Length: 409
Image (cartoon, rainbow, N blue to C red; front, top):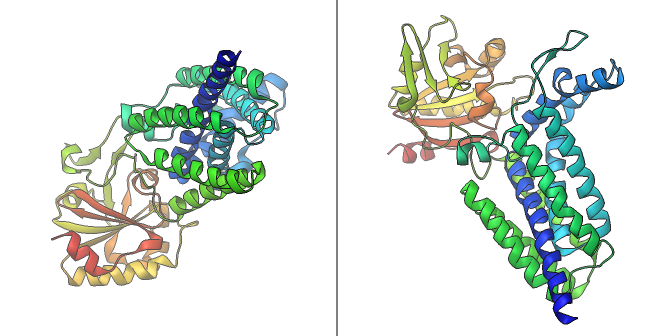
């Protein structure tokens, strides 16, 4: 009898840890780059990406999700926090019945979403809308792409969701009516969830999720000892998660998984084809610059500069315009110190930015989307030394000239 109880508790902890820790890590990866996650949501909300299925299946031709595009940042932040909280509450069994309801519902939704993505065929709908197939689900942001060289394919994401549903079923059978973990259950739940989190952290070469999960457990144990309140545990895990996501949103991601990270050497990826030159990362991502007034490709001059400070802005309508005054002052000091300066923007915003920065430093991207990839800040600052990215700054952390000089020594 005792052996049966122990095995049941271990099985319960094992399955809860697999699903819960995976959700926690998924939420942390999304929250680390909530702006990047919002771009993925924006892809899905295009009429040709998801809404057309409703047109075809239900004949609901007026159905559209594009109104949600204005709220992608809020949704990205909410989903990130929600995943972390759901994952942790599952591990410790805080409001387990409610947690299981939301988790199972979410997994069913994502299963249908990944199935839709996997079966998408480019073309046009009957109403003439171009079908925009989303290449990957964005489950782990750019982390998977940077770690193993590619994102999960839609079919791989679909299989992952099916497996998580399968792992959730034993939890529903074993734990759906039980309260918070007992001390006996806390130990295997902690051990199993840490192992799963360590595996994900190893894959992503980033061990912050382990530290974050430990901090959640510490707060959980304190609350459990003095209050034993599931609602307080949920609130505290939501608060810690919100603080983390807020920090990365108002600064830069703690871990940069994008191609143009600190240490990236532009020269190593430079390609020249006649008069056209670019820094090529892969088949879909490349970087090239043109001088504002002359439509001249200046990529070669840029990557060969001994030192250059770049301010980049990709959407002037939404940019933090007050930061340009600080950037202009920093540009003045940088030029006096012999550091090159450059303001890069999308072509359509050049004239507006000239009013803040000045005409002599304006350049623009050949590909306007590249600004979103380089830095998750608008405007953002990047320091280059001999074509290598030395450091990046969010507009909330614009440096002093002294810091630039020290970095370039």
